[in-house]
Image (tube, rainbow, N blue to C red; front, side):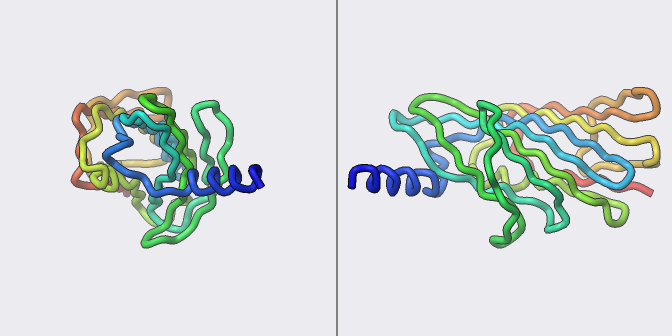
Amino acid sequence: MKTYLITIFINLCVWLPINAQIVDFFKEDLNFYLESDSFKVQGIYFFVNQSQNEYCGRLWYPLPDSNISKVEVFNDSFDKINCYLQKKINWGVFIPLRIKASDSTFVIVRYGQKIQGKSVRYILTSTRQWENPLKEAHFQLVVGSNFKNVQFSIIPQLKKKIGKQNLYEWEFKNFYPTKDFLLFWK
């Protein structure tokens, strides 16, 4: 009976909704790769539990559409977390999140998107649901040599040439995005 109750508690603990007053999403580091036929994303997302109690819940990670391949999610011990692409209002995955009292953690999300057309999108505006700006955000984009005249919804602050590829970087403080990250090319 005791084991059964513990199992129920753990299952409830992992699937409670996020409460923005207890948990704060404060930083993200994003690496994007625009390659011949795909757009790849690797993000590290940092959270802090400001309460005196352990937090167990899940967060909704939105994706631009169902044209996503192989979503991989890892916890701060680099253990893979099973998350499956599903449709809520939009496409995305639920990510279990557990943070000890007065502690912080991060999750890593990786996915690829097959390019269809002449643009790709990464959803930034969902950050506004946390009701606070990110203290820090860093984006890095590597663009393959076969992409010409790439344009951005958010102008890069730095551009470097690395062999035949271009590297773009963005650095933000108190980042509260009003638009998504869009790339267009000819």
